[in-house]
Amino acid sequence: MVGKNGKDGHKLETAWIRELAGILEETGLTEIEIEKDAVRLRVSRQGGAAIVASAAPAVAPAPSAAPAAATDHAGAVKSPMVGTAYLSPSPDAAPFITEGAKVSEGQTIMIIEAMKTMNPIAAPRAGTVSKIIITDAQAVEFDDPLCIIE
Image 1 (cartoon, helix red, strand yellow):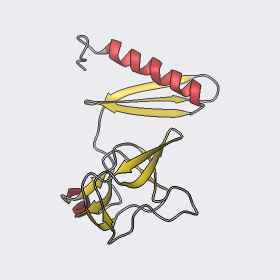
Image 2 (image 1 turned 90 degrees about the horizontal axis):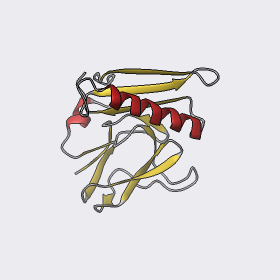
Image 3 (image 1 turned 30 degrees about the vertical axis):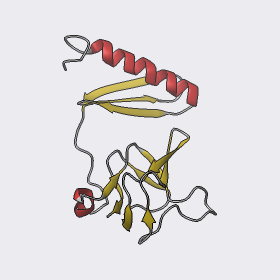
């Protein structure tokens, strides 16, 4: 692997491993994974304080449950991160959007929880929600289609 900061990229990988290991310690998580350029790095804690790290070229994601047509649709709003997607701000609240609803650019259309942080997902454009692809509390991967705004 050729890294941005050297011939073999080992400094980059070491920095990632140290940073991710620190995040594991701080948060109490047992596993964390990041992807940058063509490298995917996963650090996990097995049992006590043992840390196992692996770096490998990024591979194509597993086939998504979303139909291929939704993924390729020009109006598809895709997930900017890995996490759990929620359609409403709390279990007893009304959903941010419904199919057929008009949305304005910048309006919150759902939230994605990642590392215990709620991240609002904004409509990238104004339009009508023609399809909500995910279900409430569904795990999503980076670039998974969430909904279609036409």
